[in-house]
Length: 406
Image (cartoon, rainbow, N blue to C red):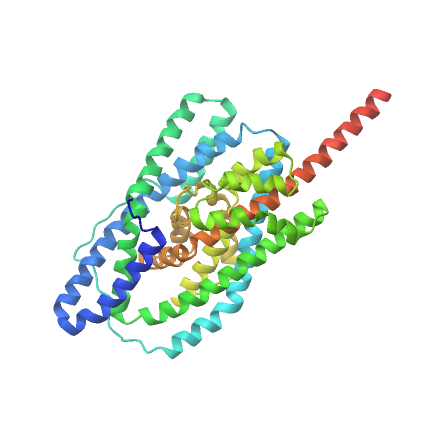
């Protein structure tokens, strides 16, 4: 039997190795330590440039065919499902912003003040290599919308086939290049942090942010199921208990798509009709990422505060609104959401390569819990869509009966 180490464990091992080597090597030979760290920094520079290059292609490859497929949906049901998913994602982002800006500033300042910085400069790459993206992130988003809406409106099957294959190519790049190399990238970042004396502060903050995010996930699920329970006249905690198998499955798979069969089965058990559940659950697996949004917003605020950058709601709201759209482009692989969001982090929040690497490490530490929150929330939204779809259907039937009687 072939033994396989999961991505989260690979990242944990990479961080542990980086911290261990960063502390041990200077005791052996300072010159070797600096050159070794500069080698890792050179790899990070190349990998970071490639990541910036591929992000616009990810957006086009996933959003354009996604919108084209949504355009073939079933009218009002599609509209309801999409509206609920987007609103849920935005609300999750705003809740995360309020919690993070309330809790993290004092926590991070206390941690920063209690740890003495070594004062050593970070190691730099041996050379510079420019990997210019073919277009900016906003241009890629706009092009994806134009192409997606265009394919849906004209029913172009040939273009759909081209973009479906382009989607597969980019997904292969993510699965076989970006995701496998992420642990090495994070290793290099943490090695450099250990070398410069910053790692103690970062690791201390890691645990605090992680606890806050898990708590926010539970708060968001409680809100979603309180609304769903109120609309469907059911006990929200009984509904949550029914959806628990989907939550646990997602923690193991780290994939909304892989959890669809379980989410669908449990969603039907909550009382959602088969017609609505069969349509909305696969759709929500793609477009509803409230748990991932909580993580991305919380982690990004943590990274900004660690770097002494200001955080304001007026600057963050556009990021949250765009994040809700960009999550449609999140590939269905572990870490896909944070990879899709790196473009927005760079352009809207001005993250540099080291900040993005920190963001990836923070995100991946709880990716399975974010995915579990996403799929469990799908059950609540399916129940709400079902209720509103039934009300709409009842009103239409009554109107037809009145017209026929006249």
